[in-house]
Length: 258
Image (cartoon, rainbow, N blue to C red; front, side, top):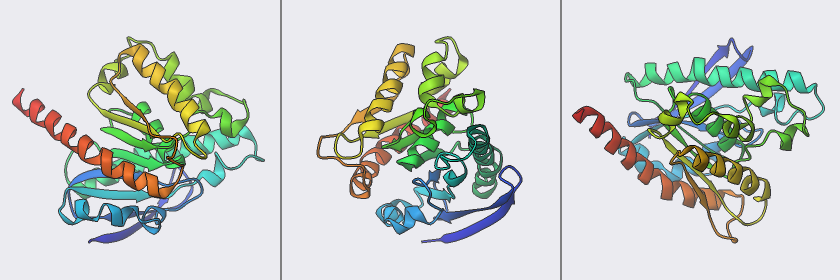
């Protein structure tokens, strides 16, 4: 399988940022890491190997990005306004640097999927909900979508934009994004076993908000034996990915028929 490390100086982050491209073609997927991890983490924990058949057949191409949560979500002793700005800078890096790189590398205008586990799921949902014009959707596994868990109740406008449990319930049902969400593939999954309490609670907030607005997002809750850990995330990605890819292909075919 093709594996290509790529690095550049990020103007938004004001530091070097890395990503790894896996595969030579297929549907583009931006991969976000777990908390405090770098772009090789998805591979190190066996998820790239888990998806090797999709990569070897050119069905998907992964763009696995660095995580910089040490400046934002994990920096609990730092000034909260600075932390929120660092998260916003990371969001800008993804949307204004990584997304254009993906389009340049693939040579097409396909909107990438965003996927991730744990904190990676949080980033994937933020990207998919804030910029559905850029992202085809997300597969988010065991995320925590409430900024209160990391900021202890502190909030400003910047953090609000990065807290899905804050901005989504307050989004008017007439907002143009609501219609776009229904043209995307939005999948959130959480287990009900160990270390999933905050994920269950925050996913239910989003689940309720989606339903209230008539958004057909798929919020799935797996069993009480399903823990917040890699063996389950491997099972979940194998379950959801083919369904999502098939749905994307069906939607693209319908658009061409129009």
